Length: 200
Image (cartoon, rainbow, N blue to C red):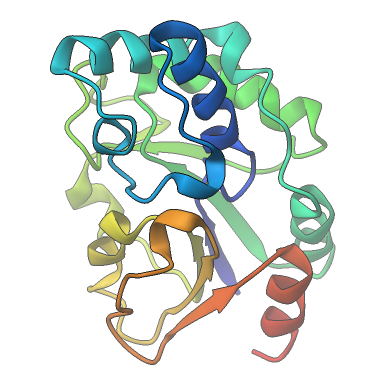
């Protein structure tokens, strides 16, 4: 099988860190469980300028490297690899974050996983024509059997794969969203992702 895995809040606890950063930078105390929107400027009630500074801080190399692994992520992914499955990490992070993102994967036992920065959101620092960056037209040429994703805003990027099974990692910001089809299944942890993938 070919498996797509999102980075933030599937592999690592990005939103928990952003919740702390919002307090430190702006005194905005929004606990992780109260983050109701994928758009963090809305969740933390930030102005455009505050949000710009917030995102820059969250993508500093030392901050990216400090994110805690989501429990079980590397264990399940390495199990998939040992079974001969192809796994790709496809992130909406800007390409400027590629270096520390790659290093984080390496440090968490995921050296054999290709990492691609997909220009989902028109990031200003996205670099074209890199081996590890994807424009949407490049991404739409790829095929996957399973996707692990947390963001409702990313669901539209699966429309070209009608047979794809999407395992939605349960997060506060996706609990009220309506899934596009019966191919979407809510998963509460990596153990449930492992069990579902075994049945496919």
